[in-house]
Length: 332
Image (tube, rainbow, N blue to C red; front, side, top):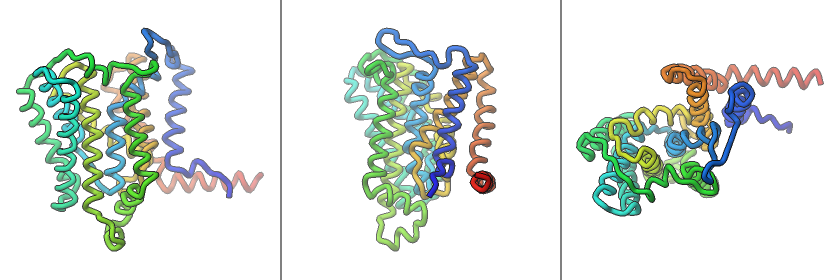
C-alpha cells in the first residue's frame, strides 16, 4: 500500500506550521536568528514556543476532554484561581513548594467539580464548564480582593523565567506534561477507553467501560493542565492578575485542538496536532508583532488561518486530494 501522509489528520497542521516558519525565515528579518545570552537561548522561534507554552498546556488537557465528546470552557478561570492562590501563599511567606502544591490541589478539585457535573450529574459539558468559567473568575477576584498581588520569589519565578540547558523552562514543562499525557493515552488502555467513549458512549457502556469515571478523569486532567498553565502565567509577570490571567485562553485552546485535526464530535486524541495548532496561532501573533502590525489585526488573521486550515479537513477537500493523487498515479 502506497504511503499517503496527507491523509493523516496531523499532517496538514504540521505542514502549515513548517510553511509559516519557512516563509518567515526567508522574508521576515531576524525570524530564524537564534542567539545565546547569559546561558539562555533567545530568538523569535524560541519566543514562539515560549509564549505559546500556556496555550499548549491547555490544549493538551482540552484534547483529551474533546476526545470524550466534551468541552472545557473553564480553563482560563482555573488559571486565574491557581495563580491567585499561589500568589496569596507566597506573600504570606510560604515556600514555593507549598504554593505550587496548593495551587495544583485547587486545580485538581476544580477539574473534579467539572467532571462531577458532567459525568455524575449529567449536565451538558458546555453548561457545566460555563458555570465555572463565570464563577471561577469571580472567585479569583475574591481571593485577590480585586487587586493585583505582586511578589518576589526567585524559586517560583523560575517556572517561567528560568532555563535548563539554555532552553526556557516553560518549554521543558510543556514537553514533560505533553509527554506524560501521550504515554498515558498511547501506552495504556486509558487512551483507547477515552476514544471509545467519544466514538460511541452507549457502546462503551455496553462493553462494560466505566464511562463516568473516565470522563471524570479527563476533566481532572484538564484542570491540572490549566493549573500548571496558571502557575507559569503568574510566575511570568510576578503577580496574580485575576482579571486578565487566562482571559479568553479557553477559546485559543479549543481552536488549537480543532486546528490540530481533532473533531469536536470526539473519538480521537490528536496531541501533536493540538500542540501544533497552538504554535500556528502563536507564530502568526509573533510575526505580526515583528512587522509592527496592530495587535487587533492578529485576531482577524488567526481567524482567517483557522478557517483555511479547517477547510482542509472537509470531505470536499479530501476528495479533491484523492482525485489529484489518482490522476498523478494514472499518468505515471
